Length: 238
Image 1: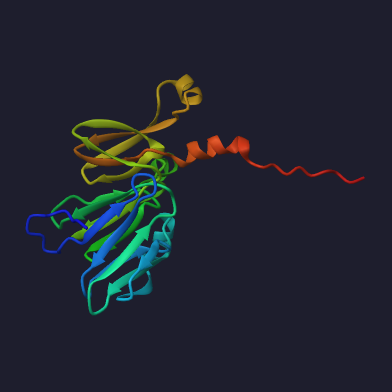
Image 2: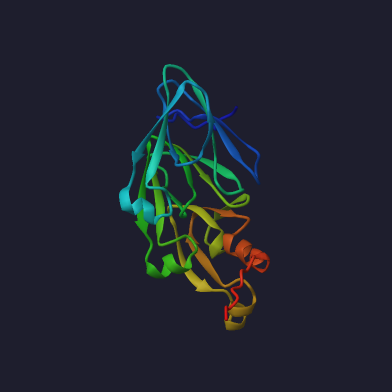
């Protein structure tokens, strides 16, 4: 397994490896003795006998509004180091970041949170009705601050984009972005393009920071799947 080295971090990065990417990624992480990892409900795939789990209510109703489960599972290595295997419900990739106290916060779209160290605090951020309804990221974002590891997942592969001034993202492909970036939601091109190009709405980002996008989008998949959907017709009885 490998880990990303940081310059004198106050919280030691977790040793981990992400395999099966980008289509069916899963995370294997080594928890040091007495170390705890907070994990999204239903994400655990396997663990060894030294790891114990307890379920805690986290964030209340606000967390439910972000598309996450009301409960988080806390996995702790008891007595000695233990291995934990995690995965998401959708076929796609997993990305790991190490946040620092003095670094920028990370914003996640609804449903992207997978796991985080106990040094990471997650908050619910309301992004406004217009942005929420049309950005593709939901009415609420998950704001992640603190120090430690955070893991998030996507539908499809994850692409990282460094933004220095302005960048345009299809609204259904946003996974995460760093603090320091602002965005507005607007239609793509003129009205003809808006209705017939298949692109619809986009998010125009401004500022300096990083954006992570996913290579697939659920609305596009549903549109492709719809013609194959089984339709049950009801016959009228005389």
